[in-house]
Each structure stands twice: as C-alpha cells, then as structure tokens.
Length: 241
Ligand code: GLP
Image 1: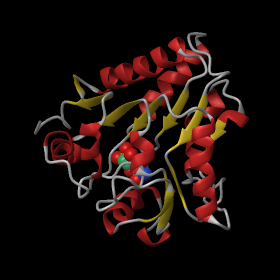
Image 2 (image 1 turned 180 degrees about the vertical axis):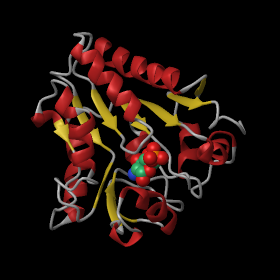
Image 3 (image 1 turned 90 degrees about the vertical axis):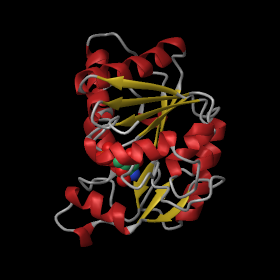
Image 4 (image 1 turned 180 degrees about the horizontal axis):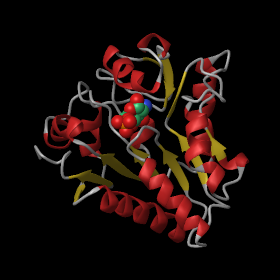
C-alpha cells in the first residue's frame, strides 16, 4: 500500500488526476471504476480540464460506477447518475455506451446487480478503481459487517450513512434506505485501486482502515490485502496515521 500525504487539496487533486491520466495514456481503452461523494469532485474537475486542454482522450475509456441509490430516478439531483454526468461525463468525450451505472430504478435489483458483475467481466475487469471512504469505513456502499467475498448487491444503508448523506437532501427521511453497490470482492478484483481520503472528519477512520486490524467491521481495511493500492490523504485526514 502506497500512502501519499498531500500538503493541501490542490496537491491532493493533482496527484489523483496524474494517476488517472497516466492510466489512460498507458492504456487508452482503460476500464475505470468511479466513485461519487464530495471527495473526488476536485479530481473530476481536473480530468475535465485536461480533456479541454487536449491532454486526455476518453473516447475508448469505459467506466463502471461503484454504487447507486435504490429508487431515485436518474434525473434526481442526488442520483449518482446525475452526479456523474454533471461533474464529469458531460464535460469529456466519453461515449454513453461506455458508461456503466447500476440502475437503481430496475424492478429486479438482484438481476441488475448480477448483470453488472457480468458486464465488468466482459469488459475485461477494472484497471483502476477510484474509491472514497465513508465515516464508518464503508467503500462503495458496503457497510460494516459486509463479508469480504461479497459481490454487487442490494444493500441496506446504515443509520450512520443515512445521516452523513442527509446533507445532500432536504431531510434525513428523504435519503433512500437502500442502494445497489459493487461488492467488496468486486472492488478487490480491480487491478489497481486509488483511495482518496480528505478532511479531519475522516482522520480516525483513515487510521483504522490503513493501520488497524483487517476486519469486516471496517470494510476499507480489506484494502491492506490488495497488492496495488495508492492512498492519497490530505494532512487533516492523515492526522492519526
Ligand atoms: C458515499 C458513497 C461512497 C463515498 C462515501 C464518502 O456514501 N457511497 O462511495 O466514497 O460516501 O463520501 P464523501 O466523499 O462525500 O465523504
């Protein structure tokens, strides 16, 4: 596990964007796994900027998003579909047919999840998975207690996650109670992983995930077992490392 501590968010975003850019330049048809949340917003802005300057070409890149709320229409401002188009896809030359998101509106979420696993396999697997971390250590929406061999599935969100994500909704009762998420095994099958952790609010969970025991109670701790993980933290998140 390679741990990089950035001086500030500008450097944090640049390091992250360099890793993604290098991946795409080395393999123009890379398969990227993408995350949502506030943490990767700066990364996506820089990638869009690099595309605008002619430094990056996404025409052969494929993406698979980690997760999606269950029951939110695609055009809902808080759906991850909306987030991804708003913050990245509408600003780069990725082809719609190369964009993959879990359909949270599907009538049969279990089939949606099983099909997603097959689609990832058919694309040759994920080359680089971008990850954030929840305050409780979740990756994707894999909450504490999720078995390490889990695959893409319908998840019940924990109270902690509903509370954390309620800042994006008018009230906590508007936050969906369920989500579809890649499993921990699905994430671990990526050839390389970049975990982004920023802010003092993540400092304790960062130390637990990166230096603590590997346990299902801290889902991100499983990443200690992956051979190619780069973790980027800002100084605040690195306080207890
Ligand atoms: C959300 C997402 C995760 C994300 C995490 C942290 O619930 N499902 O994929 O990494 O929480 O989000 P943030 O970066 O906003 O703290």
